[in-house]
Length: 89
Image (tube, rainbow, N blue to C red):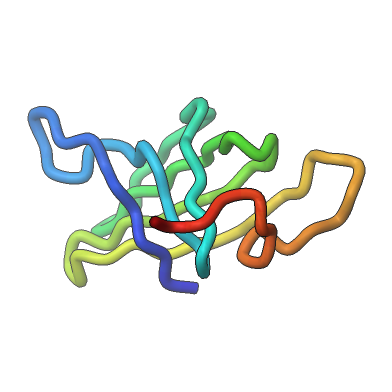
């Protein structure tokens, strides 16, 4: 699933995600838990401000971000794209 990501760019472009948007909801990255590298992509396992864990992939070749997986950590099952708690302004 494609996702809009705002990333920190230090010595490299899109060095690490700082926030991302799914549908109408924006999530702040609280912590980058892990990162690993493929041939032309970078993966980031992050904890977002909703307490859930997401794996985001950045493709250098296509210059785009994708949501690879989502792990719900809370006690209530919600779709992160439909949670009305935060909306894009």
